View 1: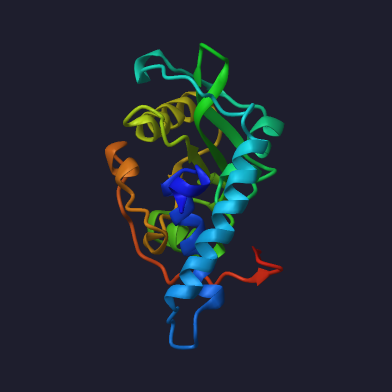
View 2: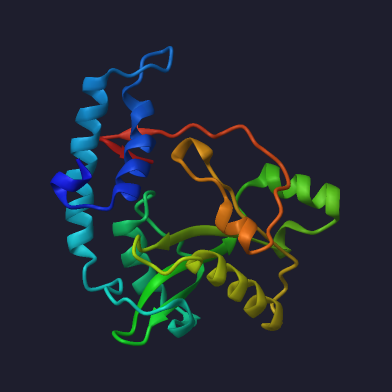
Length: 213
C-alpha cells in the first residue's frame, strides 16, 4: 500500500496501528479486510498531508555533521506536526528545536519540549526524586523524515538536553513516553543516554469522525 500510494512505509504503519483499535472487536481482533481498509484510508490521508507539508520539511540529503541545530518557530513546528506527526498536532506551549539542512533552510528532524501534563507521572517523579512537577519537561513531539541521516533523532535529543541545561531555565528533568504498540522501541532515546524509568498502563484513545482525539 505504501508503494502504491507513494508514502513513507514507517509513517503509514504508525498511523494504521493507531487507528486499528477503533475498528477492533471487543476481543481486540481485526479482520484482514479491516486492516486493508485502514491501510488504504491512512495512506490516502498521509499522501495528502505529505503534499501539504512538502515545502515545510527538507528534501535535502546532507550528512548528519552538516545539519545545523537550532530553534524552530512555533508556527512552523505546528504546521509540520499537524501534517506529518501521527497525532496530527503540536503543543502550543512547546519550545521546538530541529536539525536544519543548510541547503534549503528547512528542518529534517524536530521535536517539541513541553511542560509535563501527566499528573500521575509528575506526582511519582516528585515523590521519588523530589523534583517539583513545574521543573519537569516532556519531549511531547518528535518527527524525523524517513530519509534523515542515521542517528538524527538521538543527536537532536542530545543537543536539546545540552541547550536546556545551559539556558538557565528551571528544568531539572526531561521525560517522554514511548508506545511499543505503535512500533516504537525507544532506541533513539537509549542512544542519547536516556534511561527507562517505568512502564505505565496505556491511556485509551478516543476517535470521532475517523480522527483521534
